[in-house]
Length: 280
Image (cartoon, helix red, strand yellow):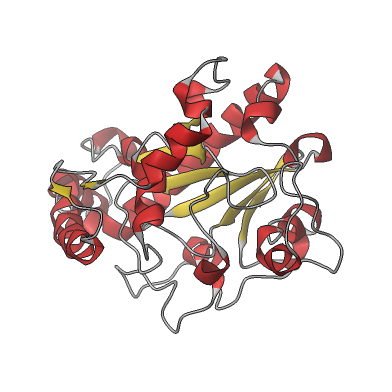
């Protein structure tokens, strides 16, 4: 049986479950990005089977939580960042990093399928890659807004901006786009197809257990640029991916290893790495 990165327990609200951290200043974009205390529930009977398999009734309330954003994005103005003819871009309500967005296709023909099936459609995959590219730029801009003032790479650029220098006079700053990852989970937790657009820091109170971390830091996370996966690719193997979720931890930044029963140690280490990463 395929394991997923999350289960119903992960969707129970915490008093500070979506809190993450850098600036108290707000702007129009951050208002759109602000996490909500409760995620929207789908209308009764609106949740389809999970990639062709039957779901237990108690699972439907959370496995189908993305469908309302796809069908009625106008009802979620604070969560929805962008709507195009083909996709809806939202903030993940349980972000696993400083910036974590979800790109949702609007095509019923595709959004009920597992990624390995939907991405066999070349035209659909091309569209999703194009939409993800522009969404990643938005994510990079938001990451810059959140951590630029801490970054040594941005020091000269920030000074130039404060002096109202023209764009031509601006020194180059940090490449925030390189800090953004785009991909899907090998075995998605939610019913509807979604592409993660996430900063690499894994600094969030919503990273609560081993599967949360390993689902983004092993081959369980499949970069969109690698799609479609060829027949025989190990990443299509259920046993291979279940094993990835059970692995010991490796720090995304420095490579330090932690035994899988030392999650609390990993979390403390990630806090330290986050502060160092911000200052790069």
